[in-house]
Image (cartoon, rainbow, N blue to C red; front, side, top):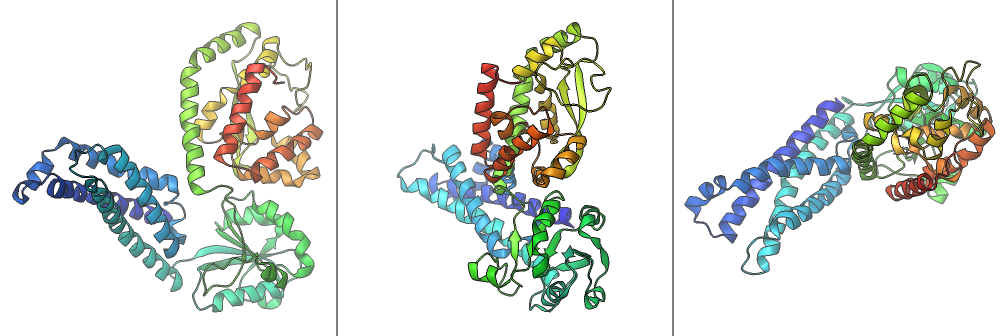
Length: 472
């Protein structure tokens, strides 16, 4: 359903972009170039710029909307937000088209500058917003009439959980929660709750249950004496994908204003936002990852070749080394590096590198100082398993040890791991679990300050470390 709805939005946006371009061209021919009415179509269709724009401009609009995050979670769009997002997107796109295409027009007066701009702004907005509003309204109607819903898991098993269920089921406007079941926090169960939805397990089973039932929304409805478990629950949920997480408020939450009301007809909740940046920043980050990785692989191709030859000539074994690491949302992937150690370096089991590590080859020490061994990871970035900037991925063997002492480590799995990170810049490579935990605080700080600007700063400092050869 999600994919079908997304295709609808894209097709109607594409059609709106094409029609608004046609309308703009006809407007310019008629009111600016003063072409006679009976010759307007011939003048338009014989203009090469018309066909060039008809092919390129709609694609540009779709790219802008994708960066804006228009096609994410299309089944949950709110009509008010749809209006504001369409206005903003149209304004940005119209300004870009104006400065790229319209400002160089031969004009009689400056009035002819803003006329086509306002015409494009108004026409494109109406042609785009009306179909979007129609699709969004139809979807909202399906939700409110219970023909469409979102798999929801309740965490809690006592009176508050049952009351939350009743509130959501009896609210004036149905919010679309399809309850797949509930899990217990301390083992106690309210019989009335079990009569309306199945008991699926405990909070220890969260990850498997969310995957099994394709859960999209989690509602935490624990009793006051279970409040200390909320942090543990949130840590587990943060590794389970882009869930919508809601917590039932108490009187204190209502007083201090931490409750978010989604609609005047819906029940109030504290909503935990799993997205650490604005949608457009996620899009820009991914685009930058792709562009910079391609550029790096092209520019550094001689370095790849020379490094590969030296690795091959200085020690027996393969040129590249692939190792399983744990990445985004706890999913394992194969991370690639130039081999910097002798073969069979871990025959005795997993071990972290340290100063004067005898397992590292002489050339491997140099590669690590200037981070040369890391450059094959641009391939991982292109694949989407890594980002240029993000917490360094670790092996499950070490994650299990870290989590026993610092369970907040799992929060790092909210983002893609990176080639470089705040922890790498401030601390460097870790040679034992204690140092991993020490470095963790810098990576957690990155989550709190995650932005395109922060990524740029980290890349600049990484480049400085490489030039100075201060890696280890």
